[in-house]
Length: 229
Image (cartoon, rainbow, N blue to C red):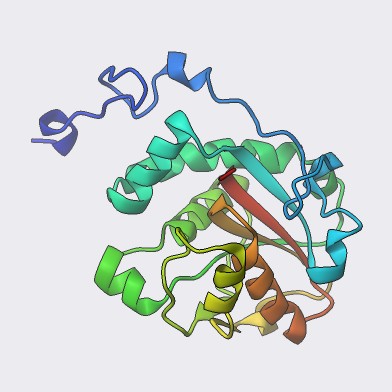
């Protein structure tokens, strides 16, 4: 007997049986306004603003939605509830935004998908998977783009959830090491995929590690949601 008969999927909004988000509740999801990923001021095509460019190599971001209500429930189910089958739906939402982003649509350099890595202890012993990696794989499949592992997390860190901006940065010092960059064509654009944006500490640390090895690469970021806490 199929598992979805024994444990049918329910909409996280209205509990209608059939899917994790029914057609009616899908209508309540609206694309996030275009902002700078770091200071959160309005910025066309999610580009990093002039002021923030001085402290990060990340050129911009694509944000799916605000991290609240229905989308928050979906991401939590993926992140902590082992509902990995939700990934396909979430990747569809993100793929749509990537395909319609003006800067990515008009660029001529190769586009490579990668992800924010997790430490082996968290990936294999605590959770059994890395949700950012699963999302990146599905996004790459839907867009017909290559996905490469371009970094490893070599330091086991505390969860970022309850840390301040300063604590997050310190927590991630020397946490990542670049790998596999020899497989990336020169002047390619790297789209780093993650689930939720809060302060941008993780992506800045990861981007610094990659650009120290390959300054010719353009780094952009794609996340499902922005946590506005």
